[in-house]
Picture 1 (tube, rainbow, N blue to C red):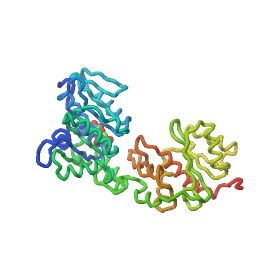
Picture 2 (cartoon, rainbow, N blue to C red):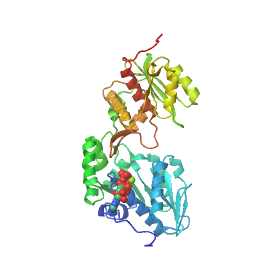
Picture 3 (cartoon, protein in one colour):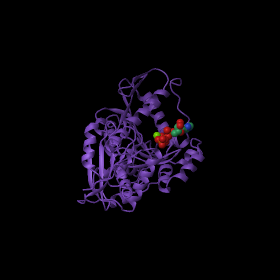
Picture 4 (cartoon, rainbow, N blue to C red):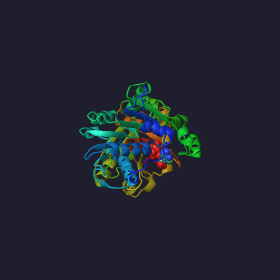
Length: 405
Ligand SMILES: Nc1ncnc2c1ncn2[C@@H]1O[C@H](COP(=O)(O)OP(=O)(O)OP(=O)(O)O)[C@@H](O)[C@H]1O
Ligand SMILES: [Mg+2]
């Protein structure tokens, strides 16, 4: 076994949380709930644990599952374990499985469609990034462990209080038998030498305090790290306006996405919202028909560029159609403008897809700064169109309006 696999050197808190979890009575716990800081080594520990489970309990065909929020993240874990495992193994890229020497099957799955998580008997499971998954995924995975009495590790960042992962962690912390609770903060990771102090200081300086506390110290905020503020988002919900539209923002479909056009009236209230999937030619016609001569800012990044040019019909920037090119910096500026508009109640929008997208937005911290972004696998086209509409409304006075009949 030593040649095939060697457990990475884990620090004491990692070992306690992932390999030796105990419940409040001091008995070995089948469930371990781990709230962990970003980059504290959650994924690495769970990988080692799942591989060891498969080695200890594996028999031909026995399933050991890695569940991630979307298939992209499941694939990353698949790749990391694949590379880390030496020795005899059969890799199936289509199914994302690794069958090891004793016949155990490590399977990497996405939680996007919880229905696809039912049906098998599973001998051990990991739910990585649990706070980004729906509760149904947990029910499904737990059901697969019933017949085998298999153990599970549920790990993630803290993301607000209103989610099953937070609630499950609180129950475990309160002493639920057979459940173990652990918190691993950035301070633990720094003390163990796996996370640099400078990086932590840098993140503290760059992030809003509440977001920093959530990501690095597992202290929940009511907003769950939402850059617009959940209270503010909800304060602006209003029915569609019947007044005429004075400005449009548009997100043009990139391959499989939707084209979204968002119209605001003179008070900033949503007066129109269109969402469609058409060929480029039909899209151009539809956009012309909807926007007419009203100032319209459209995302002209990449494939959007020739479309905007065609809409401008040779009039360039004198046209009511304006291109907005997304770079990291310009997108950030646009999002900040939207945040201000939301927080100062300058706009209103109806309940539904726009609110859902706004609520799912999060901060992303990278070495080069902080960004507002939709979580992987979620759409952001309504938010982009809304942000461009806010921008269009602000910038329309300075623009010649052409013919308004
Ligand atoms: N005990 C350890 N010893 C050495 N390096 C470690 C240890 N634990 C984690 N690391 C390293 O720290 C980095 C982050 O680990 P990992 O991806 O597991 O963290 P995470 O908490 O899952 O992060 P994320 O927030 O990105 O999900 C990796 O490069 C990993 O190799
Ligand atoms: Mg991770």
